Length: 166
Image 1 (cartoon, rainbow, N blue to C red):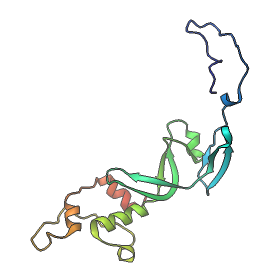
Image 2: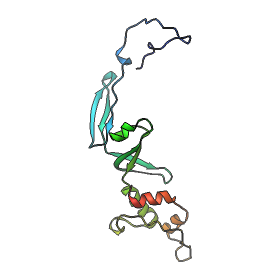
Image 3: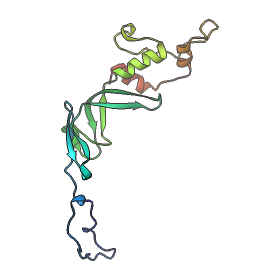
Image 4: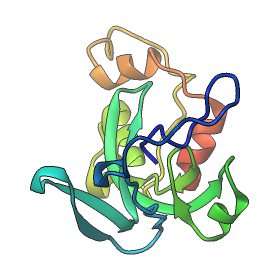
């Protein structure tokens, strides 16, 4: 609740209540957003404004911070939640829950950014991550994709996740 009437004094004594409850002090029930097809409800707020309450959602905009990109992709599953295991069992989406996402947009970006491969040219949608043995020669010194590959190393766990597609 958003009021301070329920609190006690620093010494532990009770405070006298000097006014009634106000509507703006009331809270609302939690949304408990489920992992299903998108379902959004409007909530009227103070001043006639609106909030959008997500009751169910299965997509999101996710950031790969070290590469500086963000892509919209599907949420596959809830993996872990430090708050409560029941939120994992019921596939409830809350802040700080660990989820599994579809890696396809990120695999496409890796293929395009580091290999120059787009669309149907990509083999089976798998990224080509074998860069370490590449050497620079005068013939390929102007190759933009090669210079990008040489300046970047991906972690082994990240290579595995991109290869798996999750």
